[in-house]
Image 1: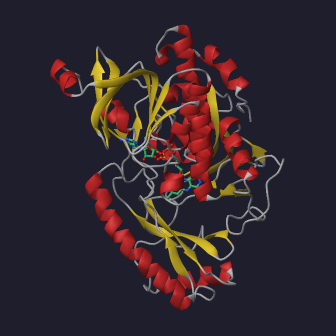
Image 2: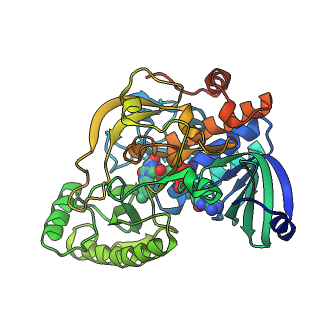
Image 3: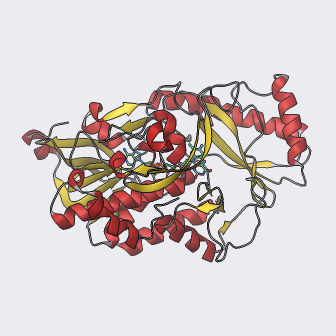
Length: 442
Ligand SMILES: Cc1cc2nc3c(=O)[nH]c(=O)nc-3n(C[C@H](O)[C@H](O)[C@H](O)COP(=O)(O)OP(=O)(O)OC[C@H]3O[C@@H](n4cnc5c(N)ncnc54)[C@H](O)[C@@H]3O)c2cc1C
């Protein structure tokens, strides 16, 4: 929305920043820390009272995509985060390459070539510590309610805080809201919307404790029989996959899903009502029918439904299948896996007709972070410019944090050279990526 004198009069500005980052998920954390460590004055705005985004709000404490084909593919801040979690005894690999049973031992100095299970509560603590140590100015419990533009650039955001509404201004903005909310509020033509056919379903995970000895294979068989016989709600996954032991006796149950627009409050409300009912139906089924779950009890449901796909920015160059499959990595800022199409919105199976499991490693180009509409706007995380179907390749938390870290470095380069982020060249960015330890080759 264009700012006017009357709006300026109504909402006073409380400060000018080099960089405003909207959203404290993995991407926003990466962006804020990398820019702040390089000396930028950074504001990080987050609706919730803690950082972490989907991982901490929606009960997903597994950093999934560190390794592809046995090679570590992301490092930098996301690795630093895992190492700090490990120092506190809050990180572990899984046994074998499953995502079912943890090792329950420290990672130590082993390379991060596979998924890492974390303690969700310690995640919030370590994110806070890393942000505070970097000198980021934190605005938790603060919703970014409007975005203002002036002379074709974004000039300020309206914060809805507990103490009232006010503006803050900046030279550069990074949209790390997952939903491309900043870009959308600035101008709806600055985003594209993922259709239901191209998207992934939304989930409500839940956690139970008191699970005694049980056998995954038996649980999977009984679950499938019950689902086929109609004894489970319609909107549960076709298989009992991703039932993960978080701690001894404590299990994440990931089967409840719904299809709907994750960037629409009324649809989110409707999905919330349905899935919350289904959580209790599934819990009842587990206690009644699955050996080992007889005495289990519910310990956590998410603060927010987990949304996998919604909006993306329209970027200088959207990520597409040709870019993904090319071995000639163009301006890489993060490596990703060449697998996508899981969690499809098809209710009959977990994957879709367009699912691709090509395997191997691809690269996300710098240009996918740059808004085509506003020269001082970048996106980071799952809302970078991409064909919707490809979001599955880079949406893992470590990759999102890496994309955020790259965006923070682009803001740093822009400040250093006195230019807009859209004018930053890859040659200018590359030394910063290298200094931060980015992995840019397969
Ligand atoms: C159910 C589910 C399970 C998943 N499981 C895994 C997994 O096991 N491993 C893995 O690596 N990845 C997993 N993912 C993917 C991963 O969690 C996300 O893709 C990743 O968190 C995206 O990071 P992000 O920083 O881009 O956005 P998000 O994590 O969505 O963070 C966005 C942040 O912006 C804030 N925000 C949004 N709008 C505003 C506003 N207007 N004002 C202020 N703040 C705002 C939100 O509150 C949030 O904190 C899962 C995703 C889902 C949905």
